[in-house]
Length: 489
Image (cartoon, rainbow, N blue to C red):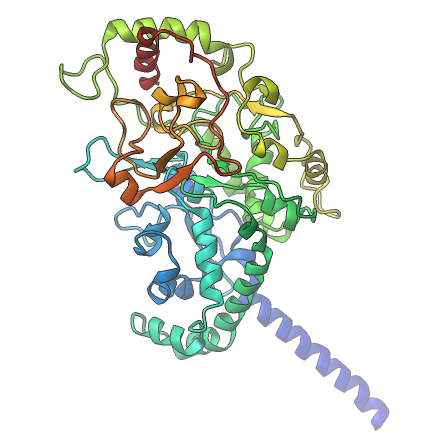
């Protein structure tokens, strides 16, 4: 009897284990596809990049975090808007967040649009306008990370407190209450505590600040398993506009330091840096491909600076000045910044360009090699990562919306970019989205810019405003003419 009973017990145990495994997968891990959208801009703003399983917050935890821990948000502490994110009317989430159901629980994660969005205003009394795929002039990725980490270690991060906040606005079913109270809230707290340890290196560097990110040090230290080399990669987010020329095999470089020559690989690497893992890639390929297609064709709004406006309009530029400035641009700038130029989307050596080199030193040959051989056992297909000692020359589409200028956003306006480095402001404020009609770029001085913006000091490591001395020796008249033309781009 005992001999016959043992196999039955083993079979029963295996069946139970299999049932538990399947149930666990269905409850916690099985991805449910997002509703399909034909709107490529909406896909970019809210589409999944496959990081919900590893980085996603259960929806109701994400929903109540700002009201539970407002003091851990930056600036005005106005919910997720405090992070510089744009909230479109009628949308459940601000631009830059996706919502996807994993198992039976909706989760929220940051996506590409978190960093690549902009807003602008032409006049102080008008509402901000969203620019899809913009240069992230006001968004604060580090503020979001620190908000999550500080909330996670806050002693008020308890199941009782969360359930009180959630059930005050949502009549949660009993099964969901139990799942949140006993599983999701404790797991989220543990994950945020782990994240705090993972990003502890940030405390030894200058803050990123509004509109900036250290994009690859997190990847180096976590994904690529490289030791902390104490480098500083703080740099502006690049806008995703007019990239149709970046066809595979073109040889054109991407990122500020030209670290890759493939747009597809760059987008995929960005998703990996935000939490995409190999077992979620199959469900994400279509979204990433459609996002690639969108950003190749995406365009910024046309410049408000025009020769056809009425005299006295602050955005009027004179025809004679624009035409004279165009001629100067063709002789001085087009070689690097026009698609027909010999140095277009190439990397200018650090010794020639002369700008702050911290961003260059952050990316290493070893990091490039490890990314090209990323995750043994899974073929991501990476082959385009490289290490070059310089900075990229890129197109100037939407230049009026790209301020502040240079790779680290260290020069406040186009006018200042034409001044010798020693004459450029050493302190200004970034993140105020009012267009500077006089100087090109955004208003960066004055009481309102100081109230809304983030204080930028060029004396901080990584924030240097030296270099790019092209045009600084022009006459004042030629500078005004060139500025008039640059505003129209």
